[in-house]
Length: 99
Length: 134
Image (cartoon, rainbow over all chains, first blue to last red; front, side, top):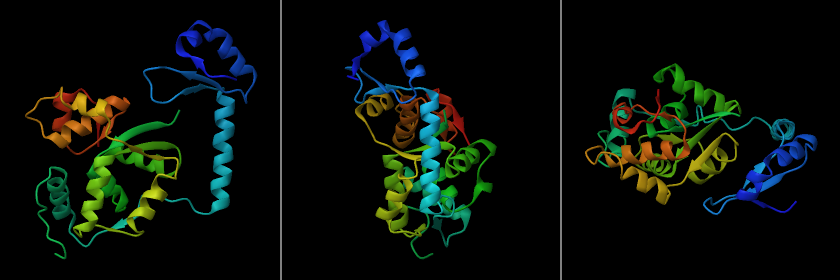
């Protein structure tokens, strides 16, 4: 299906919603001149199916990456807290490397 | 729809260090759900740059090389980069000039993405109108 301009999609919204709902694989692409990306109207059944498939693929790939525990530090938490604040504000860190 | 939030540097680092006790109930919950594939965290590009600097300065150590860490983080489907856009810069300019520049960019990122902000910097909540979590 060809992408539909936003103004046209607004006028045809009831039809497009029913179309997406009746056809789980149907992707209605809507464009807007003020947006850098297009958006898609799809059924939640389609989204849930994609999420389930993604979960299956992730399981096949092994343990997923988790942010928790991806770093370590030798610095006391309070010192690190202050150093991060200094870094964020563009000041010199309060904790010197190797402290 | 998954719930999503923006993180500041402290949030990213404390969660990455495996220190959930540093968070309040709300902020840690967002990271927990993201790691479980049931939520989303947006990482502003300047926060990611701060993280890289923190590693260069020896404040933290990443278990993977930086480029590999970034690839893996943003391949999860739960963590997303939030680029510094002209719209964010323009919005930051509407906040009080007395506020720290980095705080204004952080708040503007959350406002543009219409998501809450996980941040220790409570003063942001006083002038930005952004929902602040920790």
